[in-house]
Length: 188
Length: 287
Image (cartoon, rainbow over the protein chains, first blue to last red):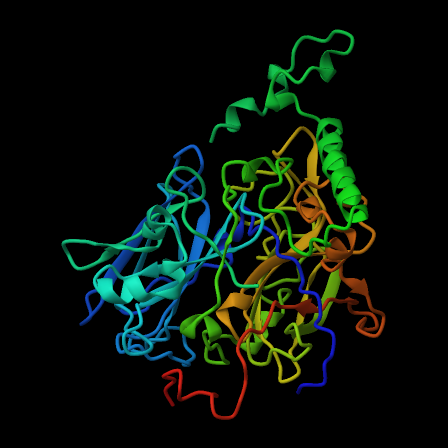
């Protein structure tokens, strides 16, 4: 295992392009839980470009722990049985740039940790995928102690925290550019 | 759709000597204009390498010759983060998700698709060279005429009733994948006047960690459109660009059936430290 081989150079990414729409979406791709089922919430948002226009050709993936903070390793995301929570979903924006998922509030993966949803974003015009996080707004003490959030300027930090809707859902927008440019992450 | 009003030749100024060299409107941008921009950026990169800058291994998010990227690239540097918990795992896919026949794009209809039948095979590896086993690979592509079945593709080339252009598979224990398909055609797009994409197959892959997620495009060796294509050239480093080009592989070619191409994918990372004590459990894994 530790035989000091030179790491391989990773393959470059490329844009998802404009024509993923007949290939990447699948039935119930954005339903991590059946809508209306116990504990389900709506996660929604809008994708904006640098001119403030909505982006009609973006596709997102979310990957998250379950409501108890457990990381799920179950198959069945592509052929959902309506009962198994796999933790992963895919959602294309509509013509108005809006995406929607049905999911659960993620639980903290460790006691006191700030719960978050991991996000990958693809779009025409975006040359490589972007990663970011969606934090739940409630546990302010956990948010204050979160290592990533603590490393951000206060005004940029808020781009990663969702708003709680009156119906219990979450709203979280993506801005590729502009005053509210979302914080995108580099893990390398 | 700000570009749709500028697509016709009617907007080109009346013919007069050298009128074509005035860049009054994006609509009249020619390949020559775009190539000058591409070559300018390539020259600057070559100079930076000479001056000791590290090689760039990924596409530039900010690459103006790809016009659609101008308003869609982050203007601030990506924020470095250490992946945590969920990011160090990947969603699980299996044979419940994907049928074995989905790896053959030539049998999805009643008849044989038109075009040159090919086999594309290779391995998905992580940055340490370990195979990525049991993970999802998805592909999509144009048909042999360079036409996507997508309704937004209005390129006046024929659709093929026997070809959809979508495939999936789950990698084997050695990280291997294999698709049977048709060699896609080049197709025109609206980035500038007379813009053509080199033939390519879109690939989507998962690793063992979500931070390894990648969507990219595989190209075919020797394509004359490479230097002209602003999307391929978003990767400014030649060695990095070469990593997207498959190799013709006669050992994959099947007699009287299909030509074979080999292409391996290397994912970033991994970042997770694998030790016996740490594996599963401590991170709250179930089962």
